[in-house]
Image (tube, rainbow, N blue to C red):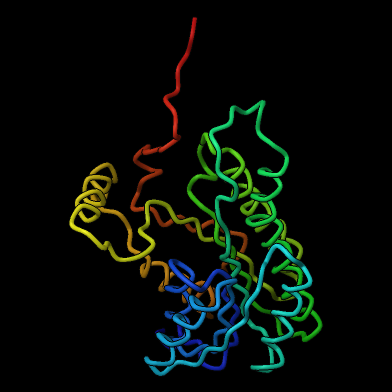
Length: 268
């Protein structure tokens, strides 16, 4: 059974792989035998991820890519094919909160909304489309994995971000339905309450501990814990799994924890 989790000779693109959850997934995929194209906008972060992979005996190559630009996404996929020979798995992980501001809903500016949609939702579409085109033409099928957020499943004052993340979930289901006949599986990982990197101070350690007490498992998740889930979804161990949401949040949603950013109220 463990052989089903091996990714030897699989060629994988991971966007947003310069840090945090993306780096953790890229490292885990490489450790399972995959060739990884490390995609992000910041060259220093990309090189750090590649150094960590190659130090552990894996193979990785860089791709400086802004995933909000469809032409750059197409070039990223082309580089994966030119470098490794194919693209077998696309992990669309890049995202972010975009322009920050404490606006009321009726004052929310167009630019802020469009930026968040482009970074999180449109980028998933661009990456999925570019990968699927090659996968269909090759006839070999493939895997597409999107990364959403637990905020997609709650109300939140920063409404553009959960709106875009919720769109990723719907996009995933539609892609799975459309691409399934071509042997392409599409799933979405939904992290929640997960630390992005090791704590750097005692104060941060204590803060994370206190936050973790509100979660059923009594701790925050660690960035590296997304790696095994990514390996499972990219591998043949999940070859009958598509169109599904994989929530990794220590039971936060099940326990009712919802950091909405505001206090719900009902006025008479």
